[in-house]
Image 1 (tube, rainbow, N blue to C red):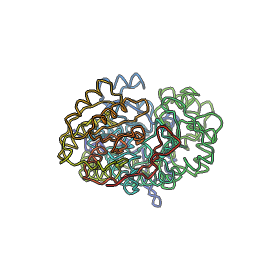
Image 2 (image 1 turned 60 degrees about the vertical axis):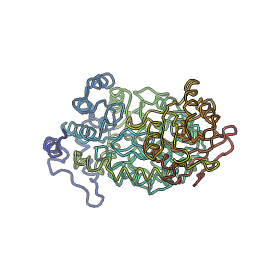
Image 3 (image 1 turned 120 degrees about the vertical axis):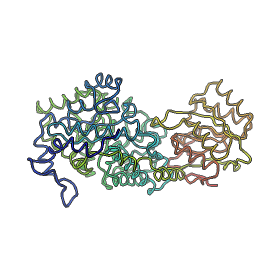
Image 4 (image 1 turned 180 degrees about the horizontal axis):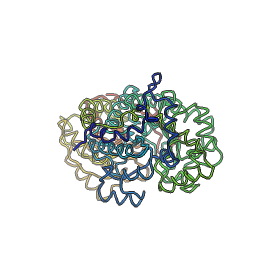
Length: 604
């Protein structure tokens, strides 16, 4: 059952009145700017207790599909990790200013449930003394990082959009994706990624980046920012000052970026400059060391020279700065979990995201103010930025969403069609020796589909081989599907080779193939059968360099359904290949030499 907005508004009428200053009317929007003026927001801040101020700076995870009645397993997880049972108790105890949704925390089962959870969170927060609405966020980058799945619309990810090269498509994806998030009560999206993927070995960014050309990435970032924000959702470019040239994943280690200051200005800075020029609402920090920008050895998240000196002063950014997750190893290597949030605030951060232990982080900030290491005025400065953003997003006027709004916006036919059309323009044809593609169902009707089946980014799509098989069947082919995994064994390879005997063609989905990968043995043994083999890179386009004998190779940049179905339409000739590589592919045996340059993409 979906509570109506009227019921919720009535239930919180008393609480909402606290958003009125001095017992007067509720805060009105400033005539000139369309946002609440700072004077009124400062009046709100002046009435907060110190504990409430500290809480307002935190954005926290919480387990469960409901704010008040989660499943027992989620109550247990909350008690273990946070010391509270529910989202409502989290808000009552810590007065957090933000909550982040994750699929693994069971926050995102379906659009109506997400909307109800959002409303429950707002109701719980507004019921507190001097209660304020909560800024609810998630990582909905699309492509390989998506927390909200079907039936919401899923778009191609950043590198696919980079291959499509259309800023209009990037903006449309942001606008539609943003509108759907807002309808579910999510008003801050940790997207788009502004990192320039200049290092093919990058384990954490890769296809999450629009590409390797700083200017092209800058244009796409600006377009997505405008798209999201036109839908009333705060966009967040990440990961400042640039996570593109690293061989270490900051979730598990502490990456060092060796760019000189001049290289940083040329390679990493342009997309962030473009985001700021486009009016970006928030910027996320990176847990990386950049000695040329700050020789102290501190991660950027804790670096005053980087966050205040460069981002605030040199680039002139005055929006919200949010940390990347404080549970990641990159920010915990040098300092304890009690020091990290304090140092982040001293560096210039406004929002502290997802600390591993909230009680430790929250109390550390409280004690730092009481002990004089941080001033209350410093907290007020960040809270003002957070409240400005909440006001701009309309949260102080009406934080609730409706079931009707979900039905009217989320996953509607016109949105799904837009995603399909955009995906078609991203599929990239890398190799087509002898004109093998497009495949004709007259000459190659029977197709064996093999390959990797990585877990769905959102938990709602795939598995890839099944999606590819179904898409071929829909177009009149006869498809047999055999999942062979990312590391096929000799027995699995033998089974695939046997299955290939009675077919007209083989489609193999490759996933991050390396020199040592047994996916190479699979493809080479399938080629030895004499059957035509078509390969589809379902993540990194660099796979093609490891499999030089494949006669037809496509890149989809992700394994979500929308990209896979588009790739099948292209390989069957129902759509033209229009994508062009947004990154160079180096030769496998000579990594200093380029096999396929940026802009490479064949046509029929």
